[in-house]
Image 1 (cartoon, rainbow, N blue to C red):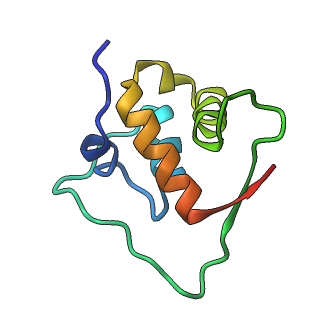
Image 2: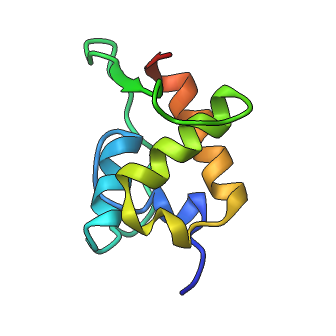
Length: 96
């Protein structure tokens, strides 16, 4: 199974990073060409609860969150997981 890069993930349908992760996890087909996610000031921030996930830092805990909630995350490269967790840390409300 090939590793999924961030550029490949951005091709999946969805408005937010979590929507794209969910679409990829469910086996949806990518939408080409790659579109950058639209930001809406009216959109409510997503809340991500990482209290039950282990890790040395917030990024590592979010990586474990991604692995737990998206079964296909095991096929993603470590660099992709770290980049996705950094994006989630920037765009979501994190509960610790």
